[in-house]
Image (cartoon, rainbow, N blue to C red; front, side, top):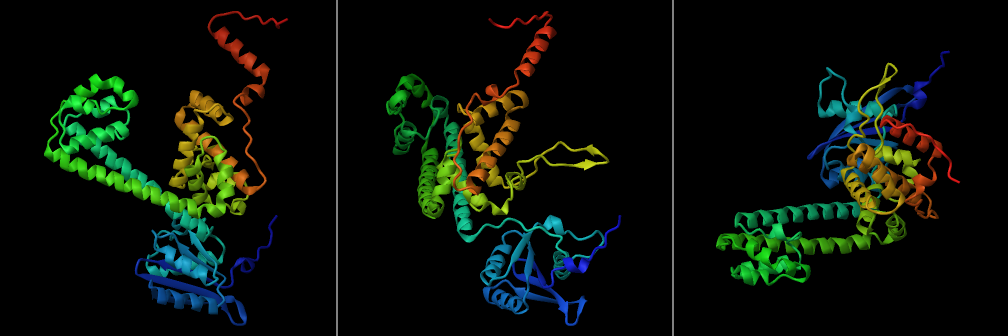
Length: 422
């Protein structure tokens, strides 16, 4: 049965689209013509990305009564434009460039891009990307910068280890962490000019003193002034990064104060600590109204298998795709940590890892953690309760378990007869 469709009722009356570059913004505005709903008036203009020009553009859009402003996610150039329009009371939408590609064969210019984007937007054929409110954005900047600092520190520590190897100093063979108290004192002594392996080995602390003999062998190298110069620079850089991380941690704690209760609830999840809770909140926010269900959140984060069906057949490998890499990283780390605990998540990780491998177990448990996060943030009264490490045993179908064991024994050549226990 054919159903009549009124397309003009689906069109947004007043809409604007922006093609954003580093230096210029091309704006296309489409509004209804006076007295004729089917005709549209179109205006295309070019503006610089300086604040004054963007303010004039925002005021012009407000005067025209524009209902929605759509822009592509182009590098970081969209951010100042988005924030300024948001401050003027407009409704900016950030959309994925993949959803608004030109049709094949059409010429591509900034003007044509803005016109095409405006026409697609007025017919409501686009979905907005998730842009958190300002407090969450500031927290996100801090947590992401902290991750970058930790990465820079790790890279510098790797350079130190390579430098010691170049000098035939095998400290990393004996010590599990060359940047512990013992390792730092030994490297400080090397910089100060000490070269005697016995003297250096005696700087070991605590459990390291059981390896004095190995340490003496490890320091029997050729550490010279060239290595001393580089090691001094590298250790100084590591100490500076440590200070920066401590300062960023203090600022994260200050920005996290309004969301302290939400962070405390997430901290109860196995594998999720204070730092992980801050990163999760920074990436998804605290308002779950943007994600109607936990499944929507998992799909946005790419922790749900993709669907590719054609001609009644499912194709593809069911991969999740690439989502928010910061969120995926922290969920993966939390899943690995939870896998070492005697909890429901730990038992789930070990069951899946045994059957399908650790990588799939990380994704599955990460998704479970994300579902728990959604429920804790969607309901302020929700409290995390662990199902227990024996949850799968208690809820297992005994007949299925019995049948599987019998089949395994029969496959080994045994004739099985079951007798119930008295």
